[in-house]
Image (cartoon, rainbow, N blue to C red; front, side, top):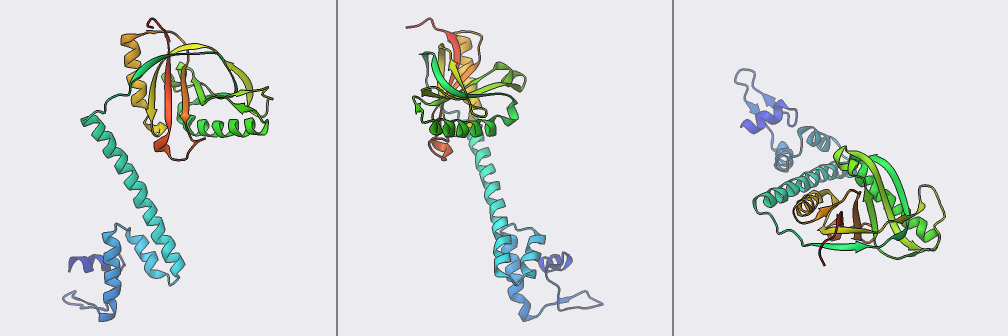
Length: 254
């Protein structure tokens, strides 16, 4: 069989004997279970070198660890495939865009962290900053008065490097600790769209908002805003996250 010849060639299953003239491979009854195990793992896409390690160790714990690593790789690949499938479905059948509304936000006292960073580092920086803000506000026994938010310079998107501020509205005097400082976020008028789900998929909401503003509003210079009614501070389930994106405008409608 071609399969047994392949197992022999890659060193997975050595025949009991090979005829010197015909190259016929002979296997014993005792080798049948090993062949079945190899076939099962190959059906599960386990690499040959991993199968060799599983077969070579008599330690059940080591075997399970090797199998668990392969399972983790399969799950990671499945997640990537599911994300790609979802993106392709969205291209073929674009979902209805969430409504866009206009809002005036008053000046707000906040605890904030501000840094200049590369956009590639924005997501882990954002999550770390949120956690640091919550810990600092709780430690200083301040009262949170609204959802966390962010202010992002245009350069962060156009040049992939720029200033970002993550903030948490609160009452009381914020004492500077580490990166956390007191700040007042200025009043502004915004066109707002809400994105639901992981922040890695937020680009389509930004695009829809940019299109709306270019066609239906008077855009003004100024950093973009985000507000996080439901974020990692509230739940680790990214599918439940809600992010409001705000584009600065000069409002001309009631």
